Amino acid sequence: MSTIIEIKNLTVDKKLNNINLSIEQGTLNVIIGNSGKTTLVKAIMGLIEYSGTISYNGSLITQKNQKDIIKNIGYFRNNMLKNGTVKDNIIYPLINLGLNEIEAKKKVYDICSRFKISDLLLKNINTLTHTEKKIISFIVSIIHNPKVLIIDDSIEDLDELNKNKILDYINKSKLTCIYLTNNESEILNSDNLIIIENGKLIDSGKTEEILKKEKIFKNIGLPFLIDLSNKLKVYGLVDKIYLDTSEMIEDIWK
Amino acid sequence: MEIELIDVKNDFLKSINLKIKENEITSFIGKNKSGKTLILDMIYGLNLNYSGKTIINKKLVTKENLINIRNDIFYLIDDVDKLLFNINIKEDIKYAVKKVDDEKLKELFNLFNLNLNILDKNYLEISTSEKKKISLIMAFLSNKKILLLDNPTSYLDYKSRQNLIKILKRNKKNQIIVISSMDTNFLLNISDKVIALNDKKIIQYNNKYEIFENKTLLNKIGVKQPDICDLKNKIKSKVNINLPHSDNINDLLKDVYRNVR
Image (cartoon, rainbow over all chains, first blue to last red; front, side, top):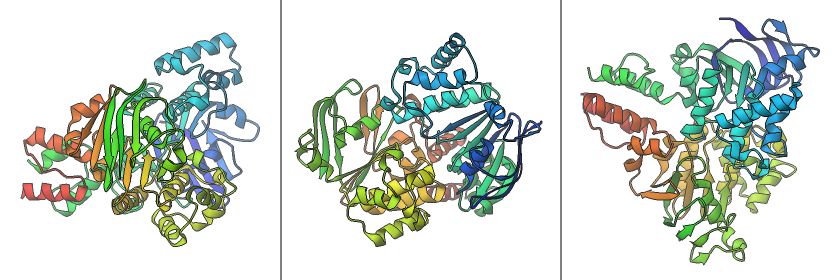
């Protein structure tokens, strides 16, 4: 696997303290913890000043190349839509990339039929429900086929159908994903887990490995199955943590 | 005190009849766009575009009655950005709550692990999670008899969710609490009544386990089964053991222990 984003000694005044991280291509990375997550992402997107370095695919991000590099990154966040119609919002990143109108329109119609939101195209953003805004925001963030997707919004309040559409898209496009969340139940879906508390990197690495360190999760909380495993361990009913419910049941009642 | 919907009909709902009572937490579940938020909007009088009646404390919800009706209601809308627009958070809270009880405010800030210096900040300077916490604090400071909470747990961290559960359970006496949410783990824990929306109709469950333990039905309405119920179903199908109902992990744990020993 190759590293797609590498962060070295990243410090942002009062918000982040000497963060070192590398994100591997094609992985799903969950970032959890009380504060510093969005600041980290803003630094990657070049939206705030920082010290330290951030590289993309081996090249250092500088003021000069920053605009070109972030074209490879989609940034899905709360409140990102601009006043106007749904269509205007979706087509804007494509026109910005230099696509002609016919190509851009075709892409917009394709994605809308894939996500079954064609009926919303001509509606004004202000008339959408909160959920519709979320789905449109997601589409705006991936319409230009980025290599990396940053999710800084809660997708756990979408219904199963909508949530699966998003997860399905991420899987099929082999996107490298950086998913910021406060909800510990989202951890189980990730390859790698990054914990940032009070602006400091507490731990990062393979999710399975980090989940074994129960104490780290005191404030964050553990996903249900891991929490249950730990509690059953105390009762002497199991001797390890489980990532699979059926396996756990078979071991308890064997 | 009660909320009553009588023969409510519009494009999204087919003749809804419903009573919501005090001392209880009533939860709505269903797909996106199934009408959960719509019903909260109707109770608050934000949407009056339907036939039938909504009655709150014997008062009919009409355009003329709105100020009167809203005196008793705090509505935590899903889009928290719309609740914050003043020069700083202190003013936002004052605007929403009118009479602020400082002691209670401090206690709530503590429970949601917020620093008091946020009061002097502006909504542009705080995170989405902080916005959510502030709007929940407004709801609990408002002392309104009716709380309408749309997606109260989204953006919240583990500890804040635990404390939200505590506050809701403590507050529900003499209050009507109505929740719309996708967070079924949370709903299993706190709900007294559950109302499922499907195909423009409602099904009311006075026993929450009846719906949360029914995976087929939950799939049909696009809602994830709570972890505890999912585990119980799997225990039943794998080793044919029927554990008692439980809505929290500690009870479940004791049941498993008793059964294995």
